[in-house]
Length: 251
Length: 192
Image (cartoon, rainbow over all chains, first blue to last red; front, top):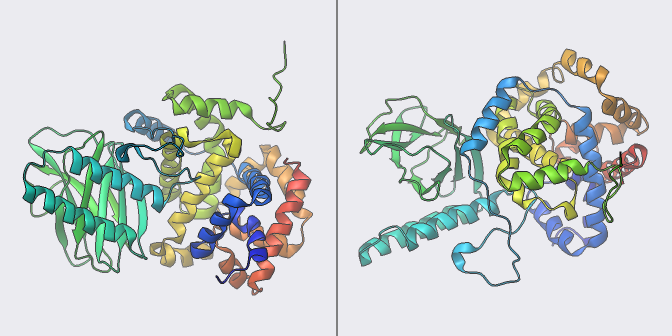
């Protein structure tokens, strides 16, 4: 590898400040798992960074508190990480603990949703199962794409939306958590909001355990954003209500 | 009245109240979460404002970060670090994700063109913020390169290669100066 070991150790500082990215970061995290002195140093330096944050304290407007507390009331919490030395059933596998779950955790969350759909949601025929599996593979390809990026955003109704985007694949994988359940006459519809025009990107399935199974949308073009609106059952060709969330996919 | 002493293995001075509160949050206790909010929303928002600058976006990122604290509370492990650091790590990561996503590259130009945060607000809070006073004194004890590198990386949200570019300094130099500077800060602030 390009980064010799003695060099890796000096990354403790930039790592504590979250100022190292990409392959170098992955490499250092790998090193960190086996290097106890590095771990201790990172802890001390991270606590030092926390002091820098404390010194920058600024009271947020009261509306922030209202929104956050309202969101917690409808946001399901993640289960604790279970001892991973013990073998577990596939569906109960939880992502490796990580200080801030990024792509790996999102992949786990999305994979779990796929597994739930494959395992539980009334897939009756061979054909249905096969098409669900090929959908699953297409989703896996986006998640594994070298340029995959993840974004999450709170929705206006207190849920959250997560999108994984790969420009190489020209696709996105979209999933949500904590969205309010809709009456049967309505549906959440996904849109690709391009500067030239708005394209339908599919309907979100009804949530299972608070999450909607991942939806794959392709045909991404430069400048696209992704958005969700509430529409009459069956969907519409253009949005008719204001979006509950919009995320720019600009890379 | 009995003073509560830190338990064995946990360093003195660490706010164990927060550790306990986060444990309660992990079990879905919304009152505990509100207490965590009251203690840490200021530093979280202040840090995010420093990095993101834009007020509306900062509020949004603050909401995301604090909601992530709620969702992931069960993943907090006191053996691996303090609750405050766990929360601040999430907040900084969220802020940095927002500005580093290249969508922000255009805004980034504007961001650097703007004055560093709204200076009036910072000055106002700094006056009553003893932490700020202590940190400022410790920052004053660093070399200029150490101080600039740390400030750009942490408050600016720049990666260290970006910091090296901004300061016209070699990559390896910035990396070691940041580490040396942080170690000096740690010793100056008495962080264990």
